[in-house]
Image (cartoon, rainbow, N blue to C red; front, side, top):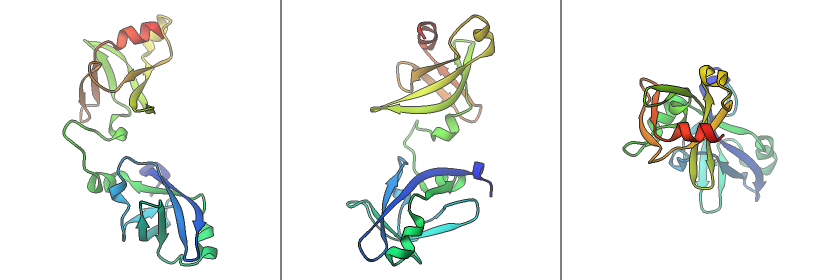
Length: 177
């Protein structure tokens, strides 16, 4: 397993109490994957398994770490899962996609290639596509990158299998960037 095969989903915080409980800072839209018996990577080869979790208090306890002294060894460790496990454990609604499937998609408006999605960013409650501008447009002195809201009326279609996103109004945003 390589680090590039892993998806960051949480960070373990400080210990709480006397039984090895720890703060859990979830960085995923899918908290349902954090359940008793679920295992996560802390690096390319080492895994931790959840012994118990309390979402109301934001606490987690891992198997084999039942004292504060043992648990402190996990402070500030990141938790990772695989892309395959994410697809298995996390349910999407109709028309939704995982962010990691959207990254790398070519972005078009009408038949013009505008660029490629490099990242998704959440600003307040709106998700944005961070698009790296295509080389041909860079030659025309356009911005190196630009943000487009990941919602209607801008978003027309996403085909993660073909890695193509069709947008409306994105050229205007690029022009104003």
